[in-house]
Length: 139
Length: 399
Ligand SMILES: Cc1ncc(COP(=O)(O)O)c(C=O)c1O
Image (cartoon, rainbow over all chains, first blue to last red; front, top):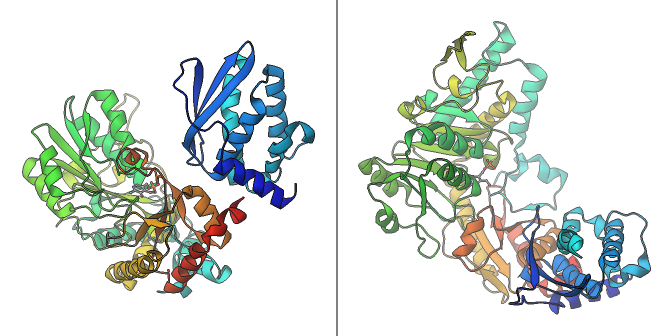
């Protein structure tokens, strides 16, 4: 991805993230993702209906990488069922691990295609997806 | 000061190392002392009757004397080598306090302690019903008045860092020590951030137990010190059993332990590490801890005066006289700032500095921390200031 395009995607999603702000709604499942090696701390809430992700929102203190990744993840996942969400998760992980992956499927998530060069930030990029891993079986 | 003594700055002249609260660089003499042990007289301690083994004994026990002098103690046998401050505090809590406290006894700590001075207490509280209470902070600081207010007839322990790793504030240790003495309270001091940077006198301060790590004072990793008054160490139950610490044992289960301090140093110790610590102490005493402290305070004053002029820099501990600066770039997450500074070879720490519950008190959860040591310079600060002044570009660098 062109570095300027990449930066613009990340910056937009960091400064104006999708789904920012938690909801007072008990039909959401709340998951806290505490990144093991660093200090990001996000609460992410999922609303699941009829086997699909109906809504996601989040709040917390986190770096630009994990905040923007959360925002893009939310855009990608809303409306998805279990298989679709799993496919996004698998391909995203493959990209971060420098394995073969479906570029087209990931769309804006391709903005993290070079994050493997900074191992300490890879965890940040993965952080929101840790929460997906925890709820995916509830779909 | 003495920058030329540190190989790393020759290897990498552009390195600006401002994370001395986490660990410090090592002068060549310290590294050499370790290499010497490994290349010229490798042998176990307290074991053989041959020359190099005796040489090891002399070197190893010699460091005990050096530590004794460093903290102005009288007896070498009150100095125990451990693997670090964390291990030392755990020994105090699980080897001593566990057998000398009873359910309902109170331990006073603060929310700005390092995790290693909180978690063992919380664990012991769960195990045996002691009560951990937090001394309220006054503008982040511990005051003797607030300590006094918290003390009652159930208070059995006060356990505090002499200098914190978050803001670098120094606690009124002498007054608290006196209070402890008058009230029969055990006084545990975490010296991790003080011993490397200032003179300390365990006798004058009435300290019962002191813990610190070699790696934060120019020494190697994996070595630390536990100081304890003899009558307390005598009653510290060894938390680790094995060779080197028993005098005799038999198959009936009768064990007799050696005397202090060997009893508390089971197994082959970190001999190379202890020798390195000895060399670090020699070095620090030669430069002079007062000189080091003065240098750090001067660097901080210099830095603050410049950083204050940068509009989007928020500083949290401006007025505390020490060598530590906690700051953020306004509206930027501390980790992003650290990654940005790293781009210019400036090493700072982002995070909550293992003091996770402090965030309940100060509203900012995470900060960037700069912590100076003797080899830092005003030129390095000028570079930091230059980089922070142009930080509107930060996301061009970190993203
Ligand atoms: C105040 C304080 N106490 C204890 C420790 C723990 O030291 P170590 O990790 O060397 O055992 C540290 C180190 O970060 C510290 O700053």
